[in-house]
Each structure stands twice: as C-alpha cells, then as structure tokens.
Length: 292
Ligand SMILES: NC(=O)c1ccc[n+]([C@@H]2O[C@H](COP(=O)([O-])OP(=O)(O)OC[C@H]3O[C@@H](n4cnc5c(N)ncnc54)[C@H](OP(=O)(O)O)[C@@H]3O)[C@@H](O)[C@H]2O)c1
Image (cartoon, rainbow, N blue to C red; front, side):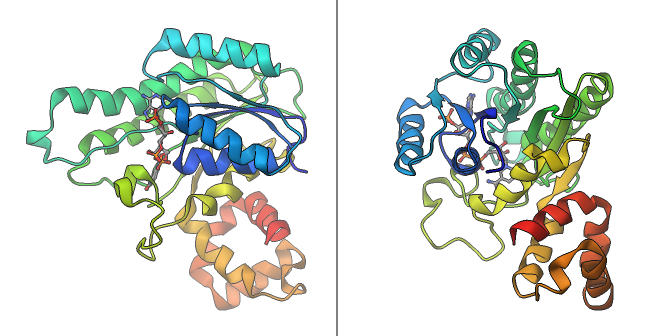
C-alpha cells in the first residue's frame, strides 16, 4: 500500500474530486481527515470508505474554508485525532458563470475567497501540524488548481482570477518554504464530472467525452503523495498532458512499458506530441508506468 499510516487531510471531500481522492487515499492505507460544509455528504463518504473494509482512521468535521477561525480549529481537531499530518490537499472550490458586468460583487468575492483565501487558510492552519522533520519523507501541500490557468475562461472571471491566484500562491510558498521539508504542488484538471461543472447532472452517466471522471485524477494525487514525489516541488501538473499517455499505456506491451527508456523510444517514434508533453515530468511517467 502506497500510503500506509500516512495522515492526510482533504478539503472539499464531501463530493466530486475530493471524495474520489479521499477514497483512493484510504484504499492506499492512509488515515484521512475529511471536511466540507455539508455533514451529510461527509458522513456518506465515511460510510463508503468503511464499506471498503480499510484499516485506516476516517475523521470528519465540517468547516467553511473562508472562515479562518473555523479552519484553525479544524486542523487542531485533525491533529488531535490523527497526529502529525503528512499531507494536506487544498481542494475545496467554488465557481460561477455570469457576464462579468453582471457578476454580483458578493458572488465574485465568495469565489475568490473560497479558491484563494481557502487555500491560504488551509496552509496557515495546517502548518504547525505538518510533519516536517524528515527530508526523505517530506510533508505535502497539494492544491487543486485548474486549467483555467493559463487558459482563461470567458464569463468565469472570478474563477479564472482565483485559479491564476493560487498559482502565484504556490510559487511564493514553494520558494519561502523550500528548506522546510514540505513540497507545494498543484494539479490542474480541465473538465471533471462534478457538481461544480455539471450541477445536479454530475454523475448521471451522460457526461460529454471530453469531461473526466473524478476517479481519473487519482493517479496524479497519489503520485504527489508518494515517496517517488518526495523531491517534486512547485510543479503544475496539467492532467490533459498526461491523460493521452494513460490511454496509450493501456494497450502497450510489458516490454515497452518496462522502463522510461523503452517508453521514450516508442513515444518519440509514434506519439511525438505526447512525448513532448510528458517528458518534463519523468517521475510521474514512471509512476504511471507502474500503475497502468
Ligand atoms: N469540476 C471541474 O471541472 C474542475 C476542473 C478543474 C478544477 N476543479 C477544481 O476541483 C476542486 C474540487 O471541485 P469539484 O469539481 O470536485 O466540485 P464539487 O463537487 O462542487 O466539490 C467542491 C467541494 O468543495 C466544498 N466547498 C465549497 N465551498 C466550500 C467552503 N466555503 N468551505 C468548505 N468547503 C467548501 C464543497 O462542499 P460544501 O459545498 O458542502 O462546503 C465540496 O465538497 C475545486 O477547487 C475546483 O476548482 C474542478
């Protein structure tokens, strides 16, 4: 198991991407701290994880990421229940689509507040409890960004601005804390079949082909949480660069998949664009080679 006995907190884990990642972490042996504002959703996720028969602890607590006092108490609670934290996934997010001149200032501010301040609050409140004493096993702070950085989305001005903002936040944190045995990285998905994108239609089985399932993202989070990513810092992982590789890997012989060199040769000859996209993150490619 990849994450045996690791303590991982995931914000926005009542549904969508956070839920899929929470289940994946628990399956890999982690103890998980789950949080969002909706208790029933957290209870449901807890029940689903328990039904898997996993051995790790599952702790749930509601909190609003925009409210620092609540988030401070939340992380103290997770620390008391789980012990030092190996990882925090700042995933809670909000969106909204309006012509910008018709955007209500309150809604605009809320989106910015959840998507930027929420990440800052999680970092600040988690920091005292992050396990930072082992350079061979660094603490991980992972942000769910969006491909809205750098591909701005018209009518999603607040969302786009916020997702640009968290890249800046990551860059500052990665530089500031680079001697602290903590890595700061982001996963930037395109479109995912969740309530945020598809409202109540999420999970109805009719998603367009170009929309990912939340479970498709698990590989990226597990990679950043794994020992293979111990030295990966300040990366922006664009899922759309690696999804085509995952499709290719499914049909490849074990001979080609045996290591980076043979895969590289195959990709250069047959899928040059994919090769160009993935070559900069060889550790992730090697991780995918082991999983697919
Ligand atoms: N779906 C996509 O196409 C897509 C693409 C790129 C990036 N993302 C990013 O992925 C992340 C997860 O979103 P999702 O797609 O999984 O959406 P989702 O299904 O709507 O889940 C969002 C989660 O965040 C929580 N949340 C929202 N506001 C919160 C607040 N103020 N305090 C605490 N928790 C809050 C929600 O719970 P409550 O409402 O109960 O609090 C929920 O658990 C977001 O950062 C989003 O920007 C999504």
